[in-house]
Length: 275
Ligand SMILES: [Fe+2]
Image 1: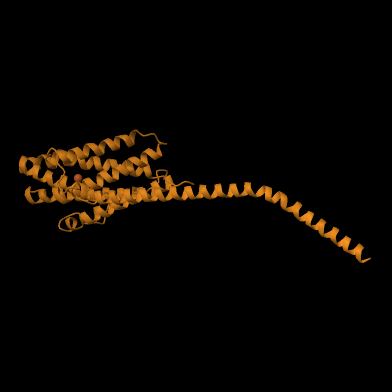
Image 2 (image 1 turned 135 degrees about the vertical axis):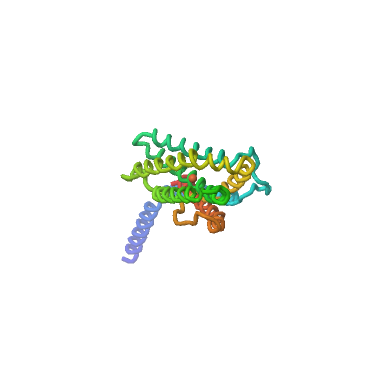
């Protein structure tokens, strides 16, 4: 009996071993493939992380360089920008022509061209904000001081700028699909064209006659020097006359440009992220 029991026990143990081996065998065969897939997944994840890090690093250094350049009133070697001198009136008229070209593009864009219209409005906001800021910093104060009887014209111009800045601030960030987007731009264009007509037909001829070429060239230099450092966004509540606007101009301009560069950097990183 004892021998029979031992034999039965040995057979049972062998069966159990065979079952265990049978169970283990497919797993051992499958393991290399699973390990390979896992390694591949890890390598892909590592590559994506490295690519993301490179993108963020590259964009960050570009941003730092752009902010430094945008907020500096002079070039990296410390010199002022050079080029042909323009008298103040010629420079302001050139600005008027450039803004009017943007207006025309907006008017000619189809009703469905929302992305194009949004880009144009962004350019209009920047161009008009910059133009208004330099006029208020260097042109209007000189005219008010040096051209007899010009005060009421200058004050009217400042009020027209004020209205335009409110419209620009409402358009800043407004979705082009908004019901009033086109209507606001139309009113903006009408207001600016009215303002430009008055300046070019009434104020500028009187200023030219009174100040003369040399003085206008000197004011033109001031306008050109101010251009790269003034605000590029509308600030209807901000000061528009000296000394307050002179005191805040550089700081507000630097903040506006840094915000713009930062916003563009965030958009670029978002576009380049491997998803
Ligand atoms: Fe103006």
